[in-house]
Amino acid sequence: MASGDEDHNLLIWNTRSGKIVRQYRLPHKIIDNIEWCPTMDQCLLAVANETEVHLICPELFRKDINHITRDIFLRAEQTYKIESVANEKKEQFCKWIFKGTAREEEVHPHILASIVFKIIISRLAWHSKADYLSTMAHNI
Image (cartoon, rainbow, N blue to C red):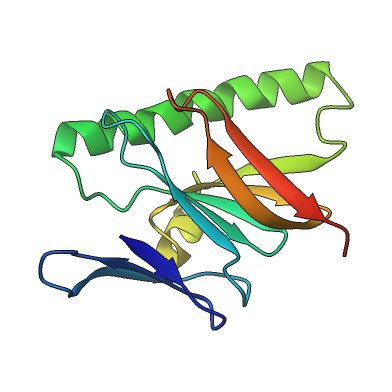
């Protein structure tokens, strides 16, 4: 189970013991919504944190699943760079920031990517196969 609060904290709980398994301090103050990826072949959590959606790998699954999750984002970063150069309107509504640099990994090592919007994201929803993530927002 995952929960968030108004003081930057994202908590992941063990539902059997009631203990905190992971704790993250995110960049913005309020965590508006949290959604687990619905498939078991990726260890991924989407967190709406004001104008950003963070995609986090809390590394709670087997090592091979955690590794596959990280590899998906390495390939996605390469594709995104090529497509954003080819299409100047790609970043009109939001911009993806992949966390591949060492400095960024030191600050938030489990955030694989952040999607930065121009509006506050209030709701997230995954497609049942985890092919898509939708966002709902309201104006600032």
